[in-house]
Structures are given as C-alpha cells and as structure tokens.
Amino acid sequence: MRYKSIPNPKLARTLANGDYKIAAAVEDIIDNSRDAGATIVDAILTGKGEKQPLDSITIVDNGSGMSRSTLLEAIRYGADTEHTPNDVGNYGIGLKTAGTSQGDQITIFTKTKRGKVWAGVLDLDVIASEGWVVDVREAIAEEEKLFKSYLRKSTGQAKHGTMVVI
Image 1 (cartoon, helix red, strand yellow):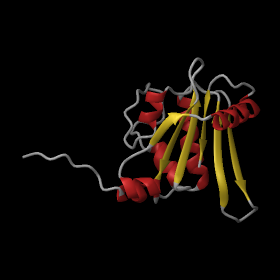
Image 2 (tube, one colour):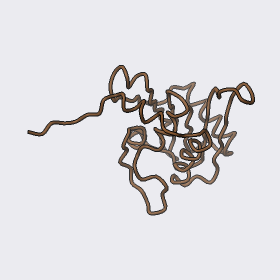
Image 3 (cartoon, helix red, strand yellow):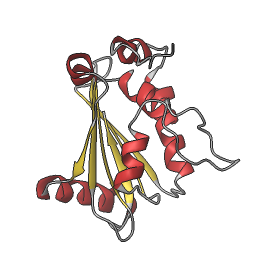
Image 4 (cartoon, helix red, strand yellow):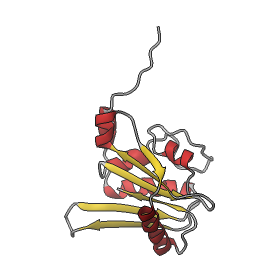
C-alpha cells in the first residue's frame, strides 16, 4: 500500500541551516531577479555596524514580477516554476534556503505590469507550529506604499518588480 509522505516541518529548519554566507545567500536571490528579466537589482543590508548581525536584507528588482499563483509556487519548497535553459535555478529551493539561512522569515512583495501587489510570507516558526503553510495575499495599502517606494528608489519606476525582505 502507498502512503503520502509529507516531510516533517523540521526539514525547513534543517534546510535553513545550510552553509550559506551572506554574500552567497544574496547572490542566490539575485539569480531569481535575473531569471525574471531584471536589469536593475538593489541589495540593501541594514545593521548596527561592522561585525554586528544584520537587522535585515532587502533585495529589490525591476523584473517582471509575479502573479498570485506564481508567488504561491515560488514561495513553496520544491517550487515547480517554468525555467528557460539560461535560468540559474532549477530545483525550487534556492530562494527559501538562501533566505532562511539568514533569517526565520522571508517576506516577498511583487507586482506585474498590470497586476496587483501581492505579499507572500514564509515563516519557519509558522511551519514548525502549523506545518507546511505559507501566507500569500493581496498587499495592504501600507505595504503597497512601502513596496512602491522601495521600487521607485531602487529601480526608478514602480510599475513592476519584486522585493524580498529577510
């Protein structure tokens, strides 16, 4: 008899404990920006000073952005998104493992040219307590305003792109 084998939520923490340095984690996320056709990518590292832990990592790009369904798939471990032969990622875990190697939560804001601003959150504490769940929803007004502000400041436009906050 066959049974569905859903991974234990502890797997998310195990994957987060990979051997990522900050630069490699940021580079892995920037690869997604390049795959989305971004010509401008801005990485903002915020902290209290040299040799202190970072408070946040924010990566903003002017790529094509994602629809709700694409964001939902992209934020899922083992994502099954379409790739071209030139794409760097192929396994669907890079964003998640890179991001969670630097923090327990990844928040993504994204917008296509004609779409809404969507927000997605992958939180290791939520996965540990509730199982393999992520939050994907329409961004609230305050989030949309912040996202467009970062997009405008980083890329010179606010029509489409993605922002990843760790």
